[in-house]
Image (tube, rainbow, N blue to C red; front, side, top):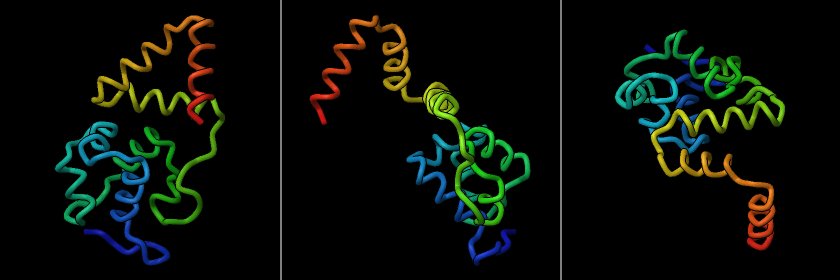
Length: 127
């Protein structure tokens, strides 16, 4: 069963905090780490505990600090370069189930330089 960690926080609460921070449903988060919605629900509710394998998967898939996940100490995420951050976001989208997001990324990748200029103008006018 779940044990209290340093600072009085519980590991399952940090998992839920992370998932909510990422804006993912239990189902979507589970997909990113190879488990079902039910598995995430059981962990968050304290019925099951996080295995070392799942912790490794979460750390790898979401660039989460293992120290933060296990103990609550430090930052939630590991520092990364802009390119690493972009790779992480694109990876989340491509591994998810939202076809609109996938198609949007595919469309953006196919834009010509002129089309990028038009898009930049549209976005700057939205601010």
